Amino acid sequence: MTDDMYPSRVGGREQIIPRKDPVIYADPADNHGPLNSTQLSFYRDNGYLIFPELLPQLVEPLREETQQLREKLAGREELVCEPHDNTLRTIFNPCGFSDAFDRFFRHPEVLPIVQQLLGSDVYRMQSRINNKPAFHGRSFAWHSDFETWHVEDGMPRMRALTAWIMLNENHHHNGPLYVIPGSHKLYISCSGETAEDNYKSSLREQKLGVPQADTMREVLRDRDIHAITGKPGTLVIHECNLLHGSPDNISGDARQVAMCVYNSVHNRPQAPFGAPRPRPAFLSSRDHSPVTVAA
Ligand code: 6CS
Ligand code: FE
Image (cartoon, rainbow, N blue to C red; front, side, top):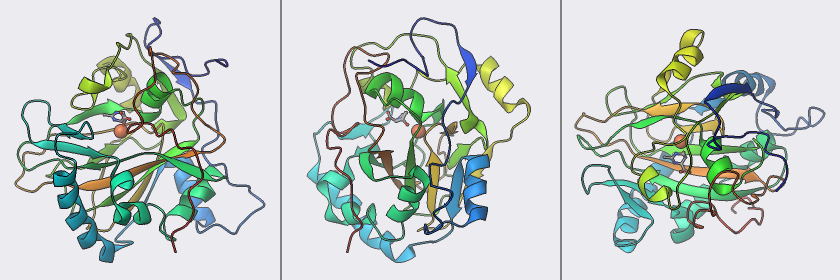
C-alpha cells in the first residue's frame, strides 16, 4: 500500500484536514472540452454543477427501465431496502443490467464533461438508482463519498465524481440532495473502525464516515447548505469529496435519481485503507477499462 494521504477510521480522533488534490484535472492549455471557463470555476469553487433539464427526452425510457430492473433483480444484493421497512431504497449497478442506463452514462452530452473535469479516460466505478419512496424514504446523513471509497474500496486520491440525472422532479419537499458548496476542499478524517461487511448495513443507514455534530458545526460556520432541486432530466455533477446528504421524504412524491460514479483510470483502487477487505464489485467495479462515448 502507498502512503495514506487521507487517513480515516484508523483509530485517530475526528479532525478536519485540507484537501491535497486538485479539483479540476483538465489541462489548462486544452480548451476543447464542453465546459467553459465560467462553469469550470464554479465547479472548482463549489464542487458541483447543475445542467437544468439537459436530457428530458431520456427520462421516460429510463423510468420504464427502472421498473423492469426492480423485477429483474428481485432477491439480489443489488436491491437495498429502507432502514426500517422493506420499501426499495436503492438499485445498484443499473449500467451492468440495462442497455438504456449503460448508454445514458456514456451519452455524448455527459461523458465528455466527466472526461474534461477528470482530465483523463475514466471507468465507471459504481452506478445506482436512488428511489426515496413517498412517505417511507429515509435520510442520508452528511458524508463525503470519497471517505467511504478511500476507506472501504481503496480509492487512493480525489480524482472521481458522480454524475446524476433527476428521473422525476426533485423539489423542496421530497427529500432533495443537500450539498455544502466549497466543502470539497476539506477532508474530514473520521473516528471509528470499519467492521467486515459494513456495507450490508451502511447502504440502508450509514453510521461510519459520518462527521459528528461539532465537526459539522465548524464546517457550516462559514458555509451554507444548498438544496439541489430541478425538473426531470436535470443533470448534476458533484465532486467525490463534496459533503452532502438528504432529509427524509415525508411528501407524497417519490424522489428518483440515477447516479454514476466515474473514476480516473489513473486512480485505480488499491487495498482498502481502513477495512478488512474490498467491497463487492457491484459497489466498486473490478472492470477498470475506459468507457467510450455511445454512438
Ligand atoms: O457506499 C457508497 O459507495 C455510497 N453510499 C453511501 C450511503 N455512502 C457513501 C457513498 O455515497
Ligand atoms: Fe453520497
